[in-house]
Length: 131
Image 1: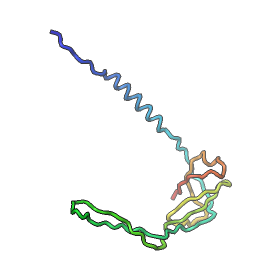
Image 2 (image 1 turned 120 degrees about the horizontal axis):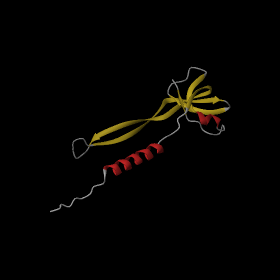
Image 3 (image 1 turned 135 degrees about the horizontal axis):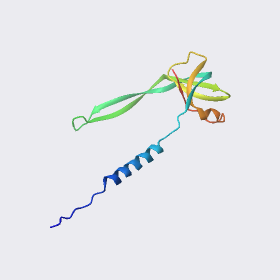
Image 4 (image 1 turned 30 degrees about the horizontal axis):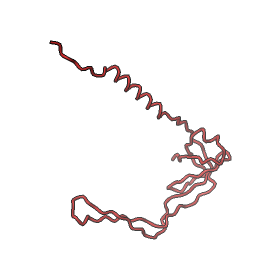
């Protein structure tokens, strides 16, 4: 008596499919991250104020269920310093960075994408300050 066997997908086909899927997803996420650190001159510093503070208010639920909380926020009028807006210039390009601490030097070392430095000055440049 001959037994009927069911053919499962061969392991080779599954492995090939997974390998192809992995290579496609890896190539989709490849991004060119060429950056450089530049010295941008500081042309202006402005404080950033928040005109209110938020206070978190948590109260237990009326049903008394364990780990059940009603969360709300109360806005309180107050003037709070949140950081500084720093105007920078580099090779006739001007852009803005935000910092928590007030800069003490006449220039900042910032990291930017290399290809953005060749763009016209109207393009916003995303930069991060190197501390």
